[in-house]
Amino acid sequence: MDTDAVPDLNLTAALEAVSAARSPEQLAELRREYLGKRGVAARVKETIKSLSPEDRPIVGQAVSLFTAKITEALDAADAVAGPETIDESPIDLTLRGHGRKRGHMHLVTQCRRDLEDVFVSLGYQVAEGPEVESDWYNFEALNFPPGHPARAMQDTLYVDLGEPEQVLLRTHTSPVQVRVMESQTPPIYCVMPGRTYRNETLDARHSPVFHQIEGLAVDRGLTFGDLAGTIEAFTSAYFGQKVKSRLLPSYFPFTEPSAEFALSCVFCDGSGCRVCSNTGWIELGGCGMVDPNVFRSVGIDPEEFSGFAFGFGLERMPMLRYGVEPIKTFFDNDVRFLTRY
Ligand code: PHE
Image (cartoon, rainbow, N blue to C red):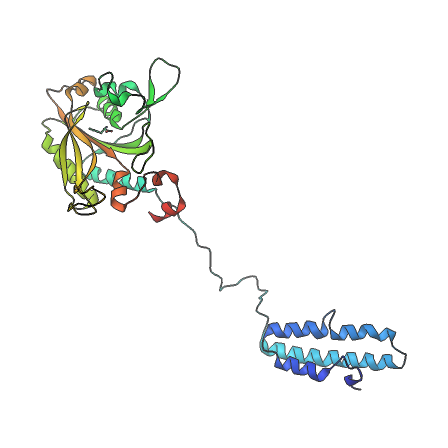
């Protein structure tokens, strides 16, 4: 008995194809081609019922022989080639895991904590106050005369509660100075970080929402020299020893005398560049000796105590340190920015 009686069942060619197959995938393909539901053997079997009674057993035996030989050859080849690479095993130890992304503090919070640490190491305490303030704390107790430009609508965001007393979003952290002086007796050494608001148009360096950190020292015999030394101490602690600070005369209603303080440019080391507009200096904030009128409004005797205060935008520090701009980058919460710092 021989499969040659049925020309479609070319056993020799099929066995050659099996021995030429190189991969488990090719063997699986051949198995489908010869032995599958619609394979060669199945198709020939289909024809048997239409054959003459004499031919039926001949073709039937040929198909059985073909099936047996090919099955044997494929099984032997499979044993050598190993399983198909589509591994049915539920655990693939070669797969990489997904890992877990860990969150971390926002850059503004990191900067705030770093500065708090610097001030705590200088003997300061940390205090906070409300973001929604009364006119008294934000302006009046701080010696803002009526009609001072900082009270004008274009700077201050007022909260309309329909009450006679004006309620506003604090325009600076200085109202916390007043709250601290009301509740503590000197000596006071305190820093007050927090969020502040101004009715300002967004640009590269200004935002209607930003953060400030305020410093206040009240003690016997404090001088302008103590203020200058404190500013030098915390700026070099944050930016490094080579950064210098300087004070220029300025005006604030709640300090007298008042000054603006600036840093030698951290980008060009003071030699002049685009960031510092070729001046070598970058303005950071305001400062001065606490005005006697402010002491009076909180019941501290200006004859007995003196004090200094300073305040500056918190975002300015990381903006300078890492070159982050525009300021809105801090508030967009773009994950690419958040994961970078
Ligand atoms: N509060 C001032 C401002 O927002 C800064 C300042 C703080 C000035 C303390 C002097 C003393 O501009």
